[in-house]
Image 1 (cartoon, rainbow, N blue to C red):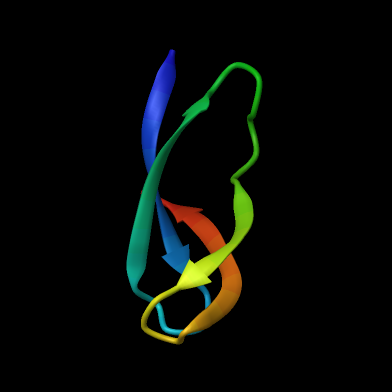
Image 2: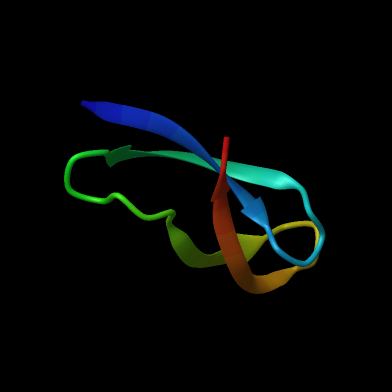
Length: 49
């Protein structure tokens, strides 16, 4: 039931991270604050397809 998702930086628009999530438990899209190596700072990363 776990799906692989890609996380995209909201500032630069690059897809930096991949992770998994359980579709049954987490129905909404994930937003995580992670480090962006292109911006060299912590930014919000949103789930994309």
